[in-house]
Length: 355
Ligand code: PLP
Ligand code: COI
Image (cartoon, rainbow, N blue to C red):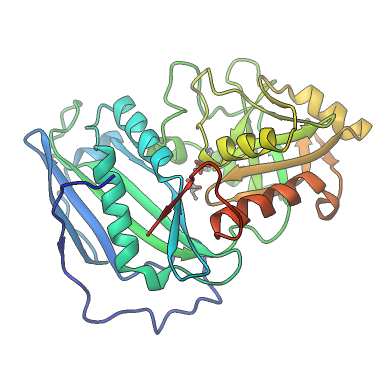
């Protein structure tokens, strides 16, 4: 869809591309040359601009800094053999962007603005889309409240910004995962399904404790009983149990409806697997780890891609799962997914938005 917004473009006169080492990218630390910005005021989006990546000025009273009206998205662009870039499932992220906005009492961003802002930015910084295997351009659109007002009420002004970062694999080894049964990420009626900044801030202390105990990640459990899987810190959790792909359902609105989750469920159904979106009890995973029926387990997310789970720690015991190197399902899924994203295989669901 082409939008009618006019974007003012000011290009950098000093590209950082030549001095950037694409062989040692750390996730989220290297930013491409430009960023997109827009303002919301008087009930409309305006001031669409692409400018050199730089600091911005902000009132110290900006309400997002005090009351958390802030959320983000994450998606990726992949280099194609012909040099073009494919942005993966941008329409899904546009949809979720507005679900987050609605829950946080923030303004809707029309889908055409979301798509045009990102497509134009990726086009201008297309040389920042890495060509190395398993690398991509991570795209971070976000919105936050800017009104200088300390009253606890929705802001009347907002900023929408898009940054991009060339990235490689998020993890380099399979994950030792702690099943969290003390802290809670989200409860029914809360905003766990929104990609709200506050969901991540509240998760940091439990995650740090898990890391201090030697684990790489958490699996959150339900707020009521801590007996059912919710999701991971920045990924949905998926398991192959007794030959079926199982993952927590999203109907309680406590977990993020991952785009990667939806993609993998769709591909698994295409491949003929039985897929179950339902409550996933910790007890059945532990039983499966013990009797060998849990043959695959991984986190699925844009940044994580498919991150194999090596072990599950639950109630003072660590259960090691099958060797990730020998896991047929997740290996096949990763290859199928990558072949589509890098344009090496047909894209039957029209997931790639080519720039
Ligand atoms: N759950 C959380 C909490 C996340 O931060 C993410 C990452 O975006 C996901 C799940 C996976 O979502 P997606 O596949 O859309 O990136
Ligand atoms: C993403 O996959 O886009 C995420 O949100 C992960 C990020 C929090 C590191």
